[in-house]
Image (cartoon, rainbow, N blue to C red; front, top):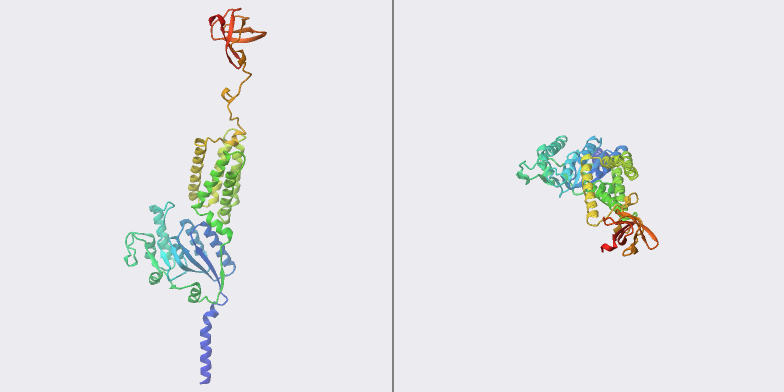
Amino acid sequence: MRFGRILFTLIAAVLLFMPSAGAKGEKVYHVPLEDEVERGLYAFLERSFSEAEKAGADTIILEINTPGGFVDAAGKIARLMDSADQRIIAYINRDALSAGAFLALHADQIYMDPAGRIGAAQVIDQAGNAADTKADSAWRTAMKSAAESHGRNPQYALAMADASMDMPEFRAGKGELLTLSAKEAEQVKYSDGTVASFDDLLKKTGLDGAEIVNMKETFSEKIARFITNPVVVPILLSIAGLGLIVELYSPGFGVPGTMGITALLLFFYGHMVAGLAGYEAILLFLLGAGLLIAELFVSGGFLGVAGAVAVVAGIIMAGGDPLVMGVSVAIALVIMVMGMVILMKFFGKRLHLLSKLVLMDSTDTESGYVSNKNRLELIGREGAAMTALRPSGAVKIGDELLDVVTEGRFIEKGKQVKVIKVEGSRVVVREADAE
């Protein structure tokens, strides 16, 4: 009996400590997936996954709380998740909506906070409207494939992306997108369990004894996420373009030029940190800027056109997505043109830079310019015609011999004449007897 009790105690002890022993030695990377899904987020996740692989991590936990974001960025993150060797657990801490739902479906397991939600994944364009049929069809297919790839019923994923699906039992009749609560997601097997905290998640998944590595965004990555947001990019480029345009219309170099150059530096810095821009994009932009400056000193226009093309190409290349960047550049160009029109039309501004290279002032009499001295003191004086005036000739007034013209009439030599008008070197006379 005594031996049996001892054996029973040993077996119970082994069973009691088995979960902890299994988790001990494991390495888990805890990676937050928060705010909008955009290209800057992808750069952070790529770094996190790379570090997890180098460290030999067994599991990556993505703590998701996002309202959604951009399809292109979500697609790249999904491919990153699919290519990872580690087990990926999605912990939906509140919201996994739109692109967030799509990413959660690419995880091996999904756990949710009691107040968590997943769904509402219709693709929306940049204007906030439902996307066109082509883009919408592609997105529904992507949602369906994401669910199927991990053994989940694709009908619920389709209902999240397609308002024509009819699921009234989940408050998603026709015309409504499906959004599942934590309890409902567990019911349809879109969630593997509901947990109240991250610690509860570790216990639920048998990872409470594992080494947890908490990943955090660096300051540079936070800036990059903000700058590379497709909403921020056109604003930044518009500030850059408008600042440089205003600087061209201002004497010296001041605040507008500083703002323009700073905006451009931020644009390229953010896209380089996000891994979207390479040195070739920066070199192409600088080459274009150099050609534009050279155009000010070389006539022909070829250098200016080539420079403008190189500048635009460098900016688009730095952005990663040609379509999004093309729209952003177009918006910035429109704002630049509007700024030029306002400065010239309403403020009467002129290009101060060009005024150093081109004579902008008119040399007319109204502006105070004359080719020689105006002899206004001659008006009203009389003299004798030393030659016949046909109508030009010579007249002696006092001791001075002058070249004059008549109003058009012929005046004989020796006749007395009177000066009636002086315009620079032109002295107009009339026969004195005619008056």
